[in-house]
Amino acid sequence: MTFIFEHRDQFAVVLLLRVLNIGASTYYAWVRQVEQPCDRDVVDLGLMSNIHEIWEASGRTYGADRVHRQLRRDGIRVGRKRVERLMAAQGWQGAFLRRGWRGGSTRQDPRATPAPDLVNRQFTAPGSNRLWVADATPHPLRRGRVLAGRGP
Image 1 (cartoon, helix red, strand yellow):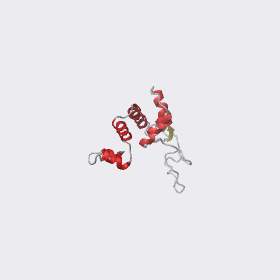
Image 2 (image 1 turned 180 degrees about the horizontal axis):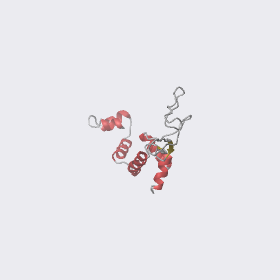
Image 3 (image 1 turned 90 degrees about the vertical axis):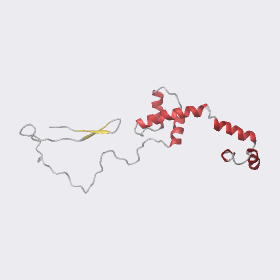
Image 4 (image 1 turned 120 degrees about the horizontal axis):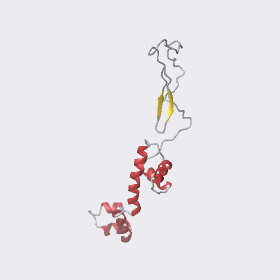
């Protein structure tokens, strides 16, 4: 059908239909469908913009399930499989944990030497602003992590 549609200016449509053994009613029904998208396709375009906003706002981590839940919270009633289909068509997918994944900000290197002990394990200072120590502990949040430390 696409071939006939693309070459209709060069050759007579009736001739192409006869050579390819396609009925005229079949071809013209297809042309109507191409020229006027159905209501569902129009709604899908609007829905895809909502899905893309949610997916981008999540840092491209939400999959179809989470996007579907967010759409429902926003008052948009749509099927989960429809969300899956639209996301798959655009190549959008959520982040997923792989087997063997370890949380943490860095990999441990067994050959690495520990940092030098500059305070000789003395955590009490003779006065204020004399000795600073900190504890860098990662805390998971909804969006990434934050390192929270304790000062003197």
